[in-house]
Image (cartoon, rainbow, N blue to C red; front, side, top):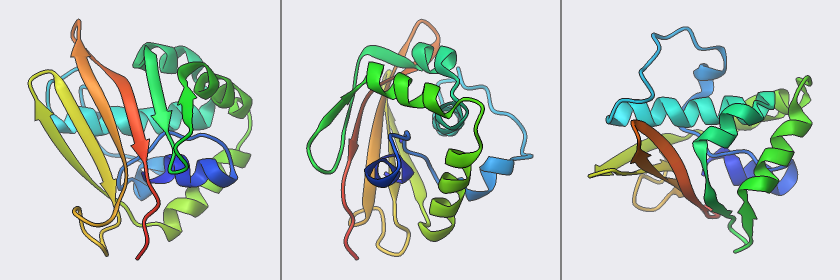
Length: 161
């Protein structure tokens, strides 16, 4: 999810981190199989996650987020799966949050790295001006179970640069 997840969360609400997807809000690229055991699948899944939060798709989110899922903000406060689902439900039927996300993405360039080790994937989002070693906004940890990726944990940070 940091990217936009918790930077937006501070002023707007919780939104799951997302990659360099400025264009993906109006995406016309070829769909990726989100169940594949690949970096492309995990990135596509993370983008889908953001869209689900923006659009209030709590049914999809409840399948993605494991019951134990936690998101820890830059302030050290943990947010539960239930809270994220409740926030997403508030966005259903409104474009207001989508417009805030689009504005944030335009002013916060973000790139993505993915590391897959066995059935664990770590997606990190970083400021390309600072690089992947100094400008990490957030990281999401996914586990691959029963043929699907599921979100287990997210960690967000403040990037100074």
